[in-house]
Length: 231
Image 1 (spheres, rainbow, N blue to C red):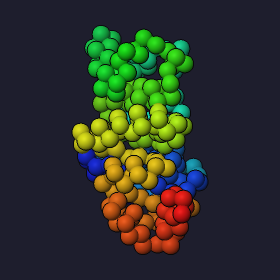
Image 2 (cartoon, one colour):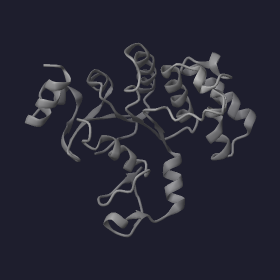
Image 3 (spheres, rainbow, N blue to C red):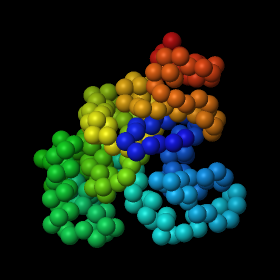
Image 4 (cartoon, one colour):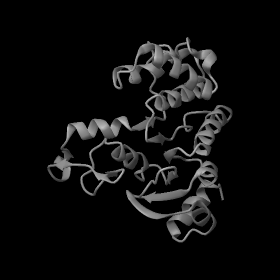
């Protein structure tokens, strides 16, 4: 699987097919037991083998993670910090940004996702859709090379889901590099430059969305799309 600069790649498949695991391996949040991971053409350095394989260069590990921002299904905001403080935290502590500069950037990003009026509120005071938009602003604050989304709308009801979809579509229109794990086939079809279908931990089929959704080649993908569309 390759995600080129400026592309949106969607990972689809049944629950347990390995979508989130693949995303977490790409971000080095989980250690893959085999295969290669390249970040901007640079291979990850490993030590050990199989179940004992670990990243072998801590500086490289931190640099890659810093440039890949993850947006999780359950928001993962810090409950004791305001929304603005949530967005500011990583730029200040990881990137060593000036607090006033980080605050200005944070407010601009909260405005970008439509919740600047919630800057001084706490996560518990926000709806699920607002919390997820805050999580997206927090990810953007790191000025990452790519954004990784792990089922960003699956914990939301349909109305709140559309708030988040609107933000994700706007980011795609800006030409941001994104890898998106999603259960929403319409979103994957509308947004993606490339779609990857996983089945039992393997890539079963991949290609442009018009091909995968319009003319699926494998029986497994045909069955999955049939079930996803309720037919």
